[in-house]
Length: 66
Image (tube, rainbow, N blue to C red):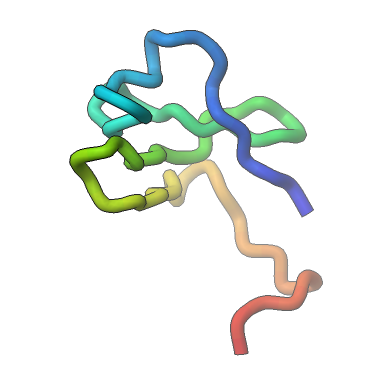
C-alpha cells in the first residue's frame, strides 16, 4: 500500500498556517513521487484531501471500508 507525502518546498504549500490548496497538487506518492492530490488544511479552511483520479488506482487487495 502506497502512502502520500507532502511535496517538499514552499512553492506548492501556499497558505497561512498550512496548505490552502491554491498552489496546484501538493501531495505526492510515497513510492514513485508522482503528484497524486491536493491537501487543503489551512487554519481558515476545513481539512480536505482531493485525489487526482488520473494519478491513483484502487487496490482491491487491501481492506477498505465496508
